[in-house]
Length: 208
Image 1 (cartoon, one colour):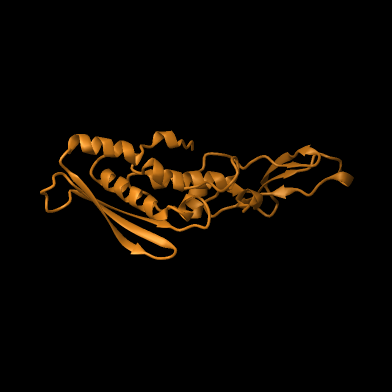
Image 2 (spheres, rainbow, N blue to C red):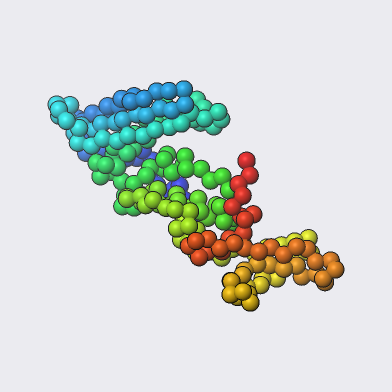
């Protein structure tokens, strides 16, 4: 589920194509909502100055944050995203890459690489970037991740994988310590989602 910002166009590159096709066109933006915590901006594209109706529109919102670029430029980012979405609606977006690079950049990754939580984020980000974004449940997202649960370690080194069916008929999947019994660390057992995928609780913990 590789993700690369370079695969997505910037709004600026879409604008260059627009102005090349419609040098007499115009782009207008309007602030639809402004609160201490959020801005909503709409954008309209006109192929000529005389057009009474826009050929495409776009809408975007940005939340004001206490740090990062949206602590000072949330309004500007909302306007840029609105223009980018209007251009995408007008056909200025590669197939499967409807979101602009600016939009994908703000879908931040909060989890460490290699963790289950990071994999879920990557699946959801990929869904967001599609022409027709899907609505994912947590179970569906986890099931879509093409990776096995991360191998576990303890103070004695790599742990031993144990999986199968218990006498009770329930499946099990986990890792046990490789040390002799008196010195063994606690085993680490995975949990199964409703979708049938295994995960370790520690993999979905997100540190602030």
